[in-house]
Each structure stands twice: as C-alpha cells, then as structure tokens.
Length: 117
Image (cartoon, rainbow, N blue to C red; front, side, top):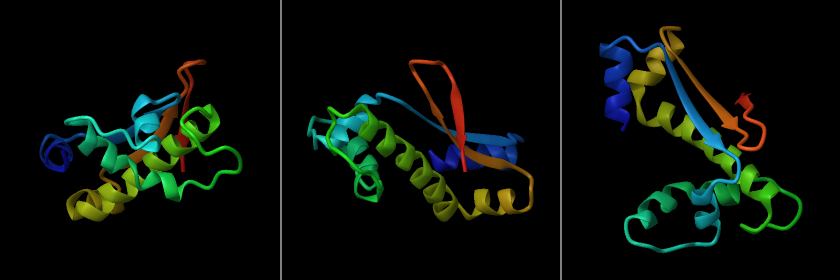
C-alpha cells in the first residue's frame, strides 16, 4: 500500500493523502475483542497497537461506543505516524510542502468529518 501511495504522490502528482477512520467501526470492535478469523486476523493485528495507546476513562470494551470511537481515532493518528516513519519519500514530500498527509474521523450518525491534528 505504501508503494501505491508513493507512486500516487511522487509520480502521478497527488497532493493530498487522507487516513479516514469512522465511528462504530466493526474492525476496531474486532481488534478490541481479539477476534481471530482467517484473513481478518492480519488486518486486526495492525489495529491492535491503538488499543493500549488509547487514553480513555470508563469501560474499555467493544460494547462501549465511546471507547470504540476513541480507539478508532487513536488508530488514525498511529497510521499517520506509521506512514511518515515507513516512507521517507512521503515524509520528504510532506516536509517540502509538496503534499499534505492528514487524518480525519467520519461520524456515521451525523455525516460530519472531523480533521485530526
């Protein structure tokens, strides 16, 4: 996937990359519940670092929508860090102002998008 992002920005001229999470995310719930299911297991393992990295007061379970959304938000932020860390090409393009890499959360209930810092 990083190769495709690098090609899109460095070769094809894309100027903006968005990591978009969303509320009530089933994959986040699956990661919280430690679901193991065929090919899904690999995807969920990439989400799991967001669970301990999420600062949250209250019930930490997949049944708590506020916790699920907090983990989803943390996952977006971690993915932004990972893109920059694992792709010197994209990091350099962003530092030079040639592209922008941003994260956001889409609220399924309201249809609003909140851009993250």
